[in-house]
Amino acid sequence: MCLKCPTTGLYVGETGQTLRQRMNSHRFNIKHGNTDAPVTVLKGNFETQQERKEWEFKLMRKFNTLECGLDRDRSFMSRYDFNLGI
Image (cartoon, rainbow, N blue to C red):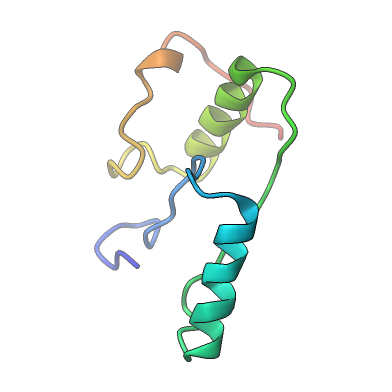
């Protein structure tokens, strides 16, 4: 967890792990007393990569992870101004 950032280390994006790997990792952390490793799956089953990227960008803006540099690659969506009514 990043304590220097106003978002306390919040990261919006996709993982390279499968859901099974991600959940196994969290079960391991819980079993070994590390309960400070949260996971949240907000949305899945996007019809296109563009739809996934648009949702990801909306969430980056909503949770302000763009300003403190936790989500660095927003250039692909910089021309869009999305309504944050998710």
